[in-house]
Image 1 (tube, rainbow, N blue to C red):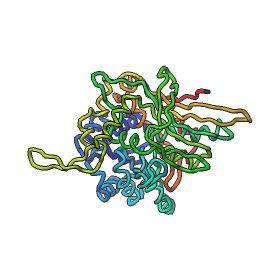
Image 2 (image 1 turned 90 degrees about the vertical axis):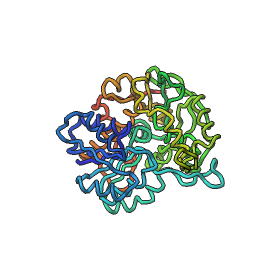
Image 3 (image 1 turned 120 degrees about the vertical axis):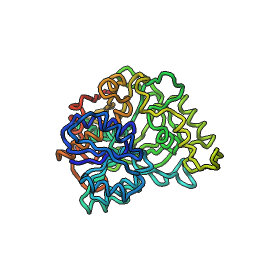
Image 4 (image 1 turned 30 degrees about the vertical axis):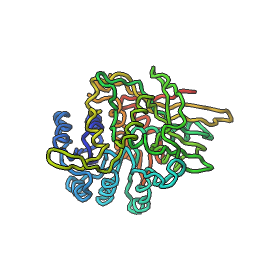
Length: 406
């Protein structure tokens, strides 16, 4: 397998460090709009037999990405950029007949009249609209294959196949007890993506109603996370699992709730109140004259790069899937989870816990595709594949998962 990795930020760099320990691929071309980042990611690996190469590419330039895939003979494109670049990279992979993987799906747009009641354009709609074309071409787009979405969806598939006869509700629950020395506000993941998913109307699925939206940060609940993290207040957030799980798994209700904390929620609300969450350009004065800038890009530029915070971070992060239903005629409730300790991920890989946990899953998926344990054509989510091979291989990567009876 020959892979083009687009994006050499925190997650992209973690992908290279995880993949470098595995023999399933021949070449990984690491490409970024900033060639210095791509070169740094490759140089940090030392001499890996020439399997890693650095290139420059603009993720918005479909023709350039397709040409890079063809020039290096890559048969897979792994997208490690933020969601703004999903569609050009998705289309470039289709042009080059390359397998496509991402960790976040095409962006949503709220309903024009009823944003907190009805869905407008949903996450992934643009990609699923092209599913027939991909299927007819016999090419696979594996969408939402990070940790959330990604591993959380694999957990849902495993629960449906092996733990339940009927499922009443599937709820993704994400929480952490991470702290960052020296910062009062320092998100552990891309603030651009965090703003997008937290301030958009959250989507909920119910079998008798379909997909619908609610107010941001709705339905607060306290969820007790494992391995010492403890109780964290979680709220509804827009996320891909709610749009993916019902396509392949029968459940009466699907939700996603994120453990943000009061201070984080109030900061996001303030950004929204001030219009600093907007992505469209505003004109501001500068020494060189008026400049058009995106307020959200300014916020991101003012905050520390999450990938650089590992040495200041302490604690654990947990991604997981809570499932309630019936097994053998009796009620059952479980939480399937994956915990990463920042101290371990920094010592083992030099990557902070959140980006490492995101990065490991697409590498596992690539290995399953390379070996034939996973295969398919069309636009498919992680739920479309057998869960057991993935979970077994994740454990083989040195990162076990757990199941807790509730």
